[in-house]
Length: 240
Image 1 (tube, rainbow, N blue to C red):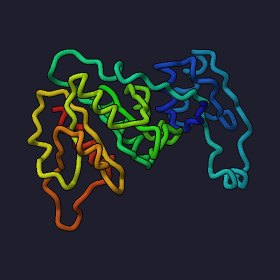
Image 2: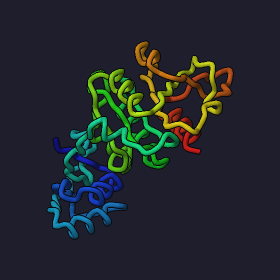
Image 3: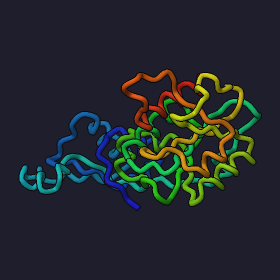
């Protein structure tokens, strides 16, 4: 599948990791604003076609939802097998993520960006009842999808059991947990599971976890965080 990416940082990351999968770059009016100058330079370096289309009429741009700016046609990145994703050495250190039915692509993209920043080893996603890795995810991740390996599975519980068999410990995140993230030991390879935006972790997922934690303290008026914000805090804490 080919994606139309509009974040120049996402396109540059694709050029750096797999230049053959960037099929073309479109620059309306031949203009390369902001980071697109670097994209154009990378396209010339790799002999990627640059389409200097005419600048779109403002009324046409409004009809097309404001999509008349620069963009690149990029092949989606392929997932890898679970055994390759879980591969690690020793019994200490390392952090992986699993997304339990996250449906907002902006949240998924933000999580990939945080995961890339903190060096997360890999991410497990589900193919059902979850946001696919769309162009929105790639653009919001701003290169994070290129940096973090991922697997897409039909059954998350089986994927978690496979993680246990590979030597990982499963850590669920829930605002209803009694244990604080600060109390989770750092000397284990953890797979952190993040739940759905509205319902959190599913029952079977919770039953598979070795530990469940929350972020504390909480204010009286706001008792929960957006899942991508919570993910950033949890990842940063476990990565210390």
